[in-house]
Length: 467
Image (cartoon, rainbow, N blue to C red; front, side, top):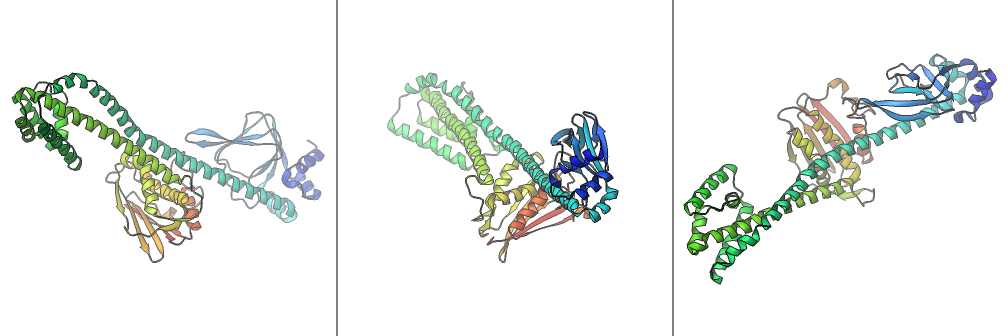
């Protein structure tokens, strides 16, 4: 390519529109051209970056290794600049670069940067602006990736938490349908019973008092097993053969030999089995409906936690709220990870903590990032404990999130809030979690500090009550 053609190509670079031709002439004389065929690797992850390239023809497709696979980050088109720029601290390539079609790159070695800065102010200024835009765009993209990664974690946890109660609803509904299909046959025996209003009232009062009492005082497994043996013995002694499901249901409601003898004393011998069946029918129906109600309540709690966590339908302005709600919603969203790792949770909350003026959604992101890091630090460890403390300290609120994991090595404690710094494996973190935490706390005129040693890491988050 002739020198005049190189100069024309440099003039076409958008960043160089206002650069004097004499400086572009200098650049054209100092740089070299490199040609790559289609799909050839221009650079690999870990390669030393020793200058910058300007795409004259073709393109360079960037791919980033994430979770063990290459992720497409886009393509540098003709006229765009990539590589190390003056004043940049870029050292090694973070990803892979591949030629798109026949590719021609104009290259300037970093050894010429000092001469460039000295003699070509406008080019230097344009390259610095380019570097600033590049950092801003990359940071924005990485922050979005970090949010999506956090959302993925929460979504997986939410799906796991919703699966159990939703399955319980389906299971109980199916059992209730099967249970009710037996009602017509049993109803025949019930209507043959000769009874009085007094006896009906007595049985109803007895039945529903046992149901209410059981709600408040569930039996232990040992006590329930002993009671089932007692019920089975009574059924056998009284010649009641149709005991399908009756023994377990009666034990669930604490209906033992004493209570059954009491019911027996009110009845004619020929009515005994029909009444026992009717009591079982009512109790079993009550049990299944209660199971469905409890599962539906759990689903409602999870949905409410999601709404509270994301702060749906609320303006993004500081407003006075009880910070405990956000922390509890976050714990609900991360509950699957706590259970999976057998982590004991200690909530040491100040009961009369005043409301604080905060950005609710943003602060929920703080709780998520710090608590999630603490849980990850205790992964696959025995006797793990997560403690969350809140207190009022003069005009400030202080939140401590403490784990008994391995601790943060002293030589990296001053780096953990740096952008893109992470100790997690590829695909598990972007290194922006704690930087985002610090940015949000700075928005609240607060401070986040960490003290760590083996067996105890304490993140302390302090911010003013008045915002």
